[in-house]
Length: 348
Ligand SMILES: [Zn+2]
Ligand SMILES: [Zn+2]
Image (tube, rainbow, N blue to C red; front, side, top):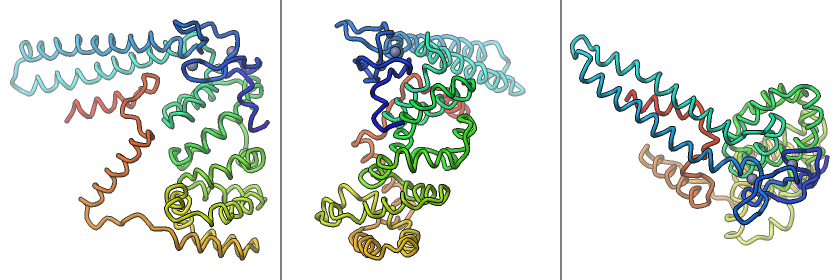
């Protein structure tokens, strides 16, 4: 297991070396992928299937409309208006629509992943999650992981961690609090083994992300890793990296621009940072952290509900500008959730 091995194997056939990257999504692929662009560049199976699935999506939407509209007209013209018969008829229509949407989306997902075994979808799904930050990919990944047999799991274990660890770290703030639960169950390993993978095999990557590209609560995760593995090295490395000259000597503007999230972590978990420094005998580092914290401006506290909404809206706008929130979802991601949204709009 190494932090660079992931580029060398094919994401779809992890027994094979990758010869080229998919011209569309950039996944490492091998000669077994037969898809190609009009210009003859090799692409992966999912990118090959996607245009067909996208086209089909339109048909499903039109089809749903073609079923719903006549039904509504029929209800208005044929069902008597007394005794709220019409209302009941409308309510009966809702499950039908939901069924159509869910069925349609299943079909689309199947089209996009056509010809791929469940173990062939695992690595691409993780990579799509890493790249997009959309946790629907992570959920579909878990669903597929759950289906693997013990042998298949054993086979894929090593490349899986090479893909999974960066994906989790880069999107740490998007995962639910209990994200480990399902993962441990499906990977059939215990909490300590998973923690060791993060804290030992991927320590450099983990600390690099936590310091230079900090995510909410990643600090807490590092403290937890130290605690559960019974090895403080990761915490020491982390604190030393934060207290390094590179960060300390930055101008205020640059510090705010590049390390605001890290400072927010320091601010939120100040007590833990200080007590860890005391326990591990890092007085100089503790001083450096305190000096950094003095230069941090906490975000404004909303004075009223209107203020809170404004601040939140500004944050969303900023995230959109940075490309962190996409305005439209990809077809692979739609599932029951979308149907639920439709249900609520329907009812209101
Ligand atoms: Zn691709
Ligand atoms: Zn391949």
